[in-house]
Length: 415
Image 1 (cartoon, rainbow, N blue to C red):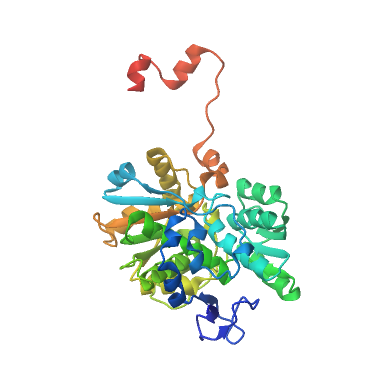
Image 2: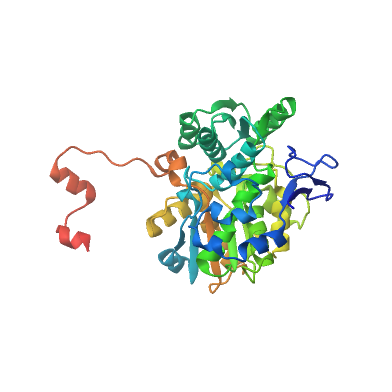
């Protein structure tokens, strides 16, 4: 039987109790999956006849009645072998798991399909989140699909237009809060405390993590074995802990024999988890005014920090920071060498690779998976703001050739 457990004091709760933190110690909760039962279900191998997706792994997910599933066909994202990029960096086996291929353009859809499905199972009609953008886009889409009302709080003036547009289009009741993400999340938690008809679907909700762990399942199946290293951007810290949970569960039921080292990457201006790791600390010191061009991870007081640190320490992993300039350079490098347009936060793993090699954390022979969590169209205004707009010329062939420096024959230029 599945149940909820506090990761700090081990207190347990019924799987259908609407609760976000431990009632005894205020700790974060996680779903404990009955893996013996899962092993029995998957032994028939019927699940392997289904397509790669989040719900291919329904036996690992805490939804009792599959009639309650709300899906937009999320998951099944590509694992791209990046040979040109690997050669430039000096690696042999580099892969990008591109979560921008999900329905709303980010990894959040994995958690949201399970979170909304659980909300339906619980009879909830109003859902809410605080967001740096991707969560709001995802929640609003899945709420629309399920017929639920959706409320979104975002930090004013700090969200990419592409993300805001999605939430607006899907009919969310959107409020811009004067402050940062942490202020918005605090307001959301207070709203849920005041009104038990509103269901919280930030990553503090343990059912979100359950959906996000399927990323690890897919990587194992796509590679055939777990990678040596899994490098992930970290903001509110739910995703890296979710992937680690997934690798552990696949090993426990005999679907994998090893687990990767989990490497967390944060922007210099928003790096409480990296700061804690460097001190070998067991707690974080929140950053009051986090700043980075990577808006999706501009979070100074991540809710799931303990889960993230556990994933890093338990896997003998690592944590690294990158500068905004390194992030932007990596975003362009990925796009221009592999045709993958990822948002700035998604480029942080790529930005970290040279540093990790120089520090001896990764080896050129390692099998490395970098997770690109969101599509570049989510934050497209960054591109024109940083790299400039295209040149504009008259409709005159000579002037166009001059602007392109086409002073040679076309066939030579195209070679």
